[in-house]
Length: 285
Image (cartoon, rainbow, N blue to C red; front, top):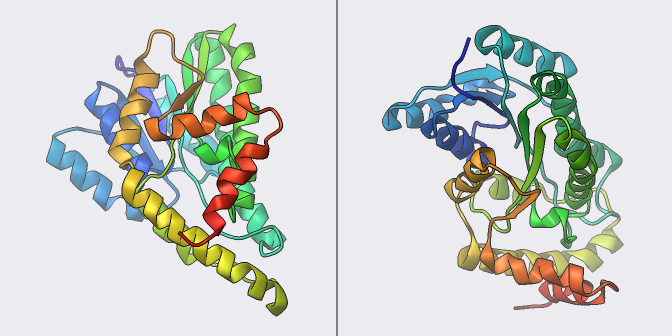
C-alpha cells in the first residue's frame, strides 16, 4: 500500500498527459500513467528514466467500461488509494456540423465526454469513502467559447464543463475537489493529428462553400499556435498546482493571452462579440 498520494492520469502516451505524468511524479505523487495502447509507452518511460523518476504504466481505454474497472482494481490492489484523477485522454475532429458524420460525432463525444464521465464515476466511490480526492479534467478554451470547425470537439468540452461545474458543489461536501484546466493553443501531437482528419461526407457543393473558410481558419490557427502556443509541460505545471493547492480553483485558464477573450463571454451576455471574434478567423489573415 502506498504512503504517497496516488494520481491516475489518462491518455499519457503523448502530449499533455505524458508531461502531466512526469510532473506529478516529480512532485511526490505515485503516478499510474494509463493509455489505451501500452505499446506506445516507450517515450514516457524513456523520459521517466532520463529524469530519474518512477511511475507505473497500465492499460485504460476510456471507451471501455471493463478496461476502466480493471485498471482501477489493479491500482487499488497495489496502492490502496486514488487521491487524484486527471481526465486527459481526448480525441478531436475538424469539421462543421454538415461535414461531421454521426459516427465521428459519437467517437468524439464518447472519448472526450462520456470517457470523462466513466472514469469520474468509477473513482468517486473510492474518494467518497476516503472523504478526500481531486478530480482534474483537461478541457479547453473550446469548452468555454465555440471554435469554428470544432463543432463536435467543442460540444464535448462544453459538456465536460457543465458536468464538472454541476458536480463540484456536491462532492465538495464529501471532501472532493473538482478542477478544470483550460488551455488555449498547445503545441502537441494532438493538433497535428486533428488537422490530418479533414472532414468528409458533405456534398461537393457544400465542400466548395466550406473549403476556403476552413483554409483561412487553419492559416489563422497556425499563426496563433506559433505566437501563443504553450507546451505540454506548461499545462502539466498547472495540473500540479491544482493537485497540490490547499483550496484548488474550479477553473484554471493556462494562457494569459486567452483571459481577455474568455472574459468577453462573461461581460457580453448577448454573445455577439464572441461570434464576431471567432468569425474573424474565417477571413484571410
